[in-house]
Amino acid sequence: MTPSSARLPRTAVIREVGLRDGLQSIATVLPTEQKREWIRAAYAAGQREIEVGSFVPARLLPQLADTRELVAFAKTLPELFVSVLVPNLRGAESAIAAQADLMIVPLSASHAHSLANLRKTPDDVVAEVARIRAARDAAGSKTLIEGGVGTAFGCTLQGHVEKSEVLRLMQALLDAGADRVSIADTVGYADPGMVRDLFDEAVRIAGDRFWCGHFHDTRGLGLANVYAALEVGVNRFDACLAGIGGCPHAPGASGNVSTEDLAYMLGSMGIDTGIDIDQLLALRKQVAEWLQGETLHGSLWQAGLPKTFGQSFATA
Amino acid sequence: MTPSSARLPRTAVIREVGLRDGLQSIATVLPTEQKREWIRAAYAAGQREIEVGSFVPARLLPQLADTRELVAFAKTLPELFVSVLVPNLRGAESAIAAQADLMIVPLSASHAHSLANLRKTPDDVVAEVARIRAARDAAGSKTLIEGGVGTAFGCTLQGHVEKSEVLRLMQALLDAGADRVSIADTVGYADPGMVRDLFDEAVRIAGDRFWCGHFHDTRGLGLANVYAALEVGVNRFDACLAGIGGCPHAPGASGNVSTEDLAYMLGSMGIDTGIDIDQLLALRKQVAEWLQGETLHGSLWQAGLPKTFGQSFATA
Figure 1: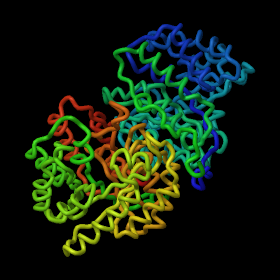
Figure 2 (figure 1 turned 60 degrees about the vertical axis):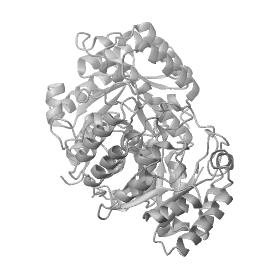
Figure 3 (figure 1 turned 90 degrees about the vertical axis):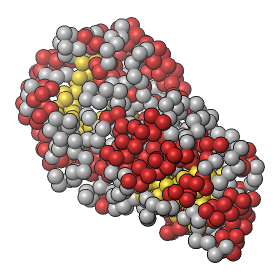
């Protein structure tokens, strides 16, 4: 452990969101059995948090129509923490019924993006989270509620998003009953300076309830942004195997940070993720076969692990 | 300017090394007139440091056989700081005769890599730098000498490289008369923790004589590594337009950090590089046409600049 890395978190969690944020963005509809195999293999590789789908109407996202079955399957794997996305109370009721461990309610800090994508203002979403909390508590359910503040660094519709508005909405989500909050750079506008600045304040406000950083690699800064977040103590990140997903406004551009590159960076830095990278790369190869014709991303799969991986830089 | 970014350098230099490190690694031999056009357009886009070639025997690197003509051309552009690579005293004599502003002497901290690639030990290279310094001074030349310590984070042949050995060799280069020293992650083994650790010590030892960070993006960490170096005050980085070049041990894997993505990251962070990114992207398009069939890299060219680029994140 180097003097500088001693200030960084010693462990980190990579939440696999490829089955939701990745698959919802591409044309291929992966059969349920292949998704099950993906979850099984990710689990075998050491991943312990997976977002398996989204409770949205199947007519909107046919790629994710099997979310209920996937939650049921994922919950058979010991210690696996199973997340789903829910856009509203109706979706939350499904997540509660399915006994998901956590449901993520997305909120867009960009009012323009929020109205265009969710047909609600950000504050409407906050009000929905309050209703979801009431329903969760009334049901005696243990499903945690995560409020995810997206387009936190700007958006392609409205451009600038006020930092103060991002933080206000994050606080409002907590006040409305969210157990966890997260921040997402939905369109790849963030740089490490912005991340450090915003995440530092967000962690001060939310404390242990700050859950996750979600970075897109649209302009190549995904891992630099993760590093900046690590420096202010954040240690849970969303990522997609093979970096699938992408920005609908930039065809071909890379989407989410790739799980394997992120696992490599964290592992190289001596930050324990519990992930076996060789197994993860084998899974990537399998998923790449399933997704033939789709644009995949990431670098590690081509270059392989360094000969020195796992050795201490400072003392070996 | 945000509180956190206030600690970072306010300006930075991107040294374009695509014409040397990039072109030497690919099969296409770019005609001299196209190289001139590249230099001219990079200059017009605001780049003020360019490594135009290498004084090595043309039979070894026919791609770079026109280095002398390119130095002469580049020196006609006002304020352009013209670098060349020289492997030995003979090359240095050519660089001195051509009146290059700076000559980079590569040294490999990995003894195995040094013997395999340069057929010299690292200390042989240090001794050669002393001879180059004597020749430079005897000629009354103003050409600066940069000692570049490569494979500083490990290498594909020997694996681990001792940090203490990297720092010893850097000090030896300074003692032998190098005016500047640099550190290179030749094979993409570095992570941000390692960079911060090593560069912090290197800058303390070399002070203002520490010149440049050279990062390969082989495993996707190039820009994260740049950010880590910025944090310890380094503000000059090598980069290749379109990320050309690459690791011969990992076909298809990305090579150097791409100039345009780096210029974007620095610009987004409010660090002035003097580069007009739109012009740089236009040049990238031109170079991509010249290099049809070669593997190119980078993300910004696909996604374009954010709508918010150039605005202050904290206050706008």
